[in-house]
Amino acid sequence: TILYYVTGPARFELMGQTRDDAAGEAFDKVSKMLGLGYPGGRVIDSLSRKGDPARISFPRAYMTKHGFDFSFSGVKTAVARYLQQHATVFEREIPDIAAGFQASVIDVLVRKTVKAVEEKKTDRLVVAGGVAANSSLRKRMAAEAGRLGVALYIPRPELCTDNAAMIAAAGHHHLANGETGAIDMDAYSRSALTKTNDVTNKSTTKISRR
Image (cartoon, rainbow, N blue to C red; front, side, top):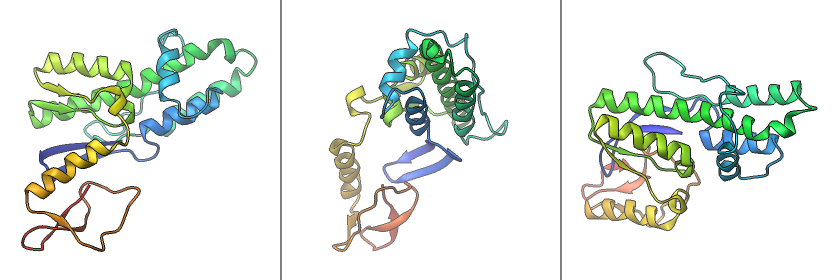
């Protein structure tokens, strides 16, 4: 879970990132705790619509007052503790647990993002990644974008995952800027957008890759 201020196809300012579990990882782990299987984002989203987020509330980790970093291990632990303390009854409470957990995660994502938009005074907001398929997050982000008067860009739910289209789009912008990959370019399962490796521009200066 990362928050970037983007000023160009290969120009990123890292504003905040998770210090432990990513939001999607938290969804998956809580889903397993509830016996809902893996991956858990879609099933928790669906169950949350049947539950009451106010009935079982979980903590929100806002870290520092002025920072943009995220932490979702605390809410995951809080769910685990609740399940241990209510082992005999939690099965009938699963929709409320799912709704309370989801509300905790979405609240943090939305508030941090809104704060970043206001600080940077940007007029565009992009929400992407697996959790961007979540219906509650999409609704909340749309409402905040409307309130702030910024354009909101969110892929269709089926594209909120690893897919060839996003990689091709990234490559298109790099190539248009004269940036190419070396013949011995390695493959990486994970890579920060701001890390410099393997890609060179016309003057062979190392630049960011994604």
